[in-house]
Figure 1 (cartoon, helix red, strand yellow):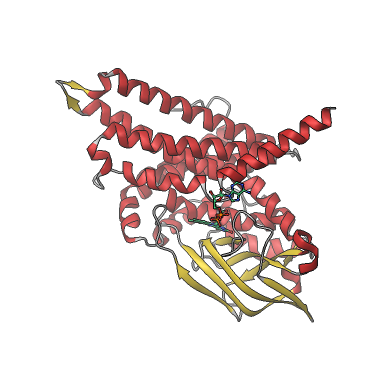
Figure 2 (cartoon, rainbow, N blue to C red):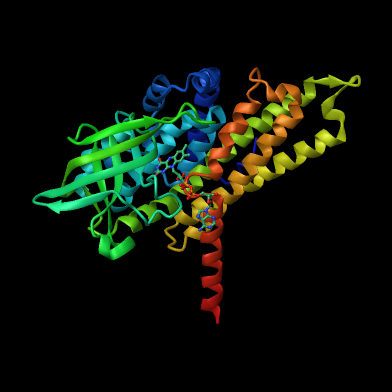
Amino acid sequence: MGLDTFLTDEQIEMRDLARRIAEEKIKPVAAMYDEKQEFPWPIVKVFAQTDMFRTFIPKEYGGLGGGILELAIVTEELSRGCGGIALAFAGTALGAYPMILFGTEEQKKKYLPAVAAGEKLCAFALTEPEAGSDAGSQRTTAKKVKGGYILNGTKQWITNGGEAKIYTVIAVTNPARGSRGISAFIVEEGYEGFGYGKKEDKMGIRASSTRELSFNDCFVPEENIIGRDGAGFAVAMRTLDRTRPGVAAQAVGIAQAAFELAVDYSRERVQFGKPISSFQAIQFMLADMGTQIEAARSLIYQAARYIDAGNKDINKYSAMSKLFASDMAMKVTIDAVQVLGGYGYMKDYPAEKLMRDAKITQIYEGTNQIQRLVIATSLIRESAKKK
Ligand SMILES: Cc1cc2nc3c(=O)[nH]c(=O)nc-3n(C[C@H](O)[C@H](O)[C@H](O)COP(=O)(O)OP(=O)(O)OC[C@H]3O[C@@H](n4cnc5c(N)ncnc54)[C@H](O)[C@@H]3O)c2cc1C
């Protein structure tokens, strides 16, 4: 399955292990977690036992030293089992990445080994009720005091919220400086003044926890700042540049699951005395689905390789992969429901869940309108430079 030709033996091994976990451990319980909207701790334990969390952690801190490509490969496979359950893994990567990219040696030594071992999950807290796409308009404040900062404010819709032990939290340290007056902090569960609020009831990825975080005079020690004071917006944006191919991979995993379901179903469902796979209308839908999935996966691999090679101008390719893969996943999952006809609409088959799960990939880590803005800005800047 898939154009695997250019993966290393190690990457294929990682992919096959993640695929086995998805098949044997995730798929059998995906509908149950979706229905109950419960956090999948037993599966997270499996991720830990099988070293999944080590994928993206540098070797010095107990990881396997994989890059964005390895992160994408594993995320896709786990998402093929369930996009929501996979998010316990991918959301932890998002929460840990600011530290991996910009953390001090002390911070990395203190926090990353437990993340690699799967003992502690991470989360990334940027969004607020008034700061969604306009992430620069943060209202959570971090006031400098002796030995640290005092945080006050609310973060909204935080993946792994309430389940993670380690949070990257973005807050304003100098309101007069706009996006240059924003800083990033490591906040641990249990810090005084840090609490959890509303847990969301969602359309899809229901096995993932999406929760409010509240900060009421929460003291965070100085050594927990990520990068320097005022660098928080850049920390957040550079992180998203690297994690968006992961959202794209989640989308491809969901689409792949929908595609396989549709192909299998079309061979079994008989109407007018023939399997529906013999009708050209169905065949053309399947052909388009398969082609679009391969195209999205190829773009993700290329974007990930470009990032892993150390290039700096990555935001365009990262945004392109997220935009293309998530729009593709939405289309493919809708078409999968169509191939299954009325059964696609019923909860007896996973098609409708895959369609609900796909939708979020067009929204979070920057909506697809925002991805288009990122891509267009980059294209126009490149054109201006040529003159
Ligand atoms: C399930 C879930 C999990 C999430 N997890 C996290 C998380 O872990 N951490 C975190 O920090 N955030 C998280 N988010 C927040 C997510 O990143 C935001 O929802 C997203 O960035 C969009 O912000 P918004 O919802 O406020 O939409 P808005 O910004 O209010 O946008 C509303 C609409 O307007 C459009 N729009 C806005 N501005 C423009 C513009 N300039 N040009 C064109 N169109 C525009 C948008 O594309 C969208 O269609 C999560 C959200 C959800 C739903």
